[in-house]
Structures are given as C-alpha cells and as structure tokens.
Length: 144
Image 1 (spheres, helix red, strand yellow):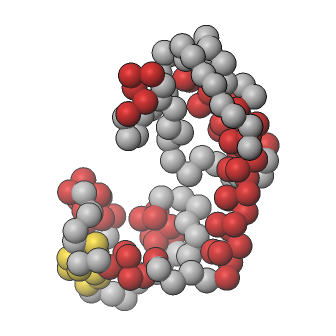
Image 2 (image 1 turned 30 degrees about the vertical axis):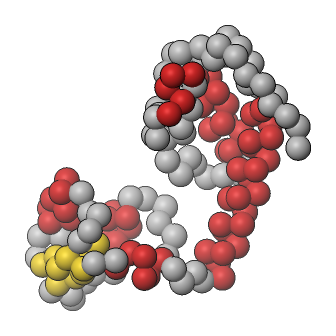
C-alpha cells in the first residue's frame, strides 16, 4: 500500500482495521507519541508490540512499489545533478532545500518524502540537518 496521507489517516480512511480488536505494532521503534496517536485514532483497538515487524513486511515489494521506487530514484538522481549547478559559496542552505523541493516536483514527484536535509560546514555532520539560513562557505565537486 502506498499512503498518500499519513499512515494512520490512510488506515482510517480506507477502513483497513475495521472489525479488528487488536493489531501488532513495531515494538522496537514506535515512538511513544506515535503510539499515543494510534490509540487516539483507533480507541477500540488493542496494540500489541511485535519485534522486527516492519522489516519482515517491508522486505517484500509489490511490482507497483518497485516501479515507484525506481521512478523516485531516477527523479532524485536527476535532481542531484541539477542541484550541483546551483551550489556555490554564498548560497543559503534554505535556498538549496527549496531548490531541491522545486526540482523534485517539476521532475514528477508528488511531494517531498521527508524534510529535505541540507547541512554545510560545521553542520555537515548532523544526521538530519534541517536547512538553515547559513550560507555555504565553499564548495567543489568533480563531474562524474
């Protein structure tokens, strides 16, 4: 299933849990806030923690998922090549982030899959660096 809204909203909208009394959830990685949202969205369900549930289910892809993953990878590769042309000293991380989002959408993406990560200089080691107003101080790249 490819969710266009949040997963919980999609489950509710499609009535995929109707008639169920309990449902397994990823016990190793489900944040408490998400668990609380699940309980609020589906108050009649009992949630049972399961280990490695997501990994075992997501390892098997349907043909449509494979096609969409390939398309997303092609779009992202194209965007990466195009954004390299925009990168130069003095450009702000926020500008790069906006350009990446714009290029993804003009290349065929429906939306950003997640908050675009742009972090330069001392911020470059941040694993989920949200773009800031920081200007890129230097940049170099070698063409493929």
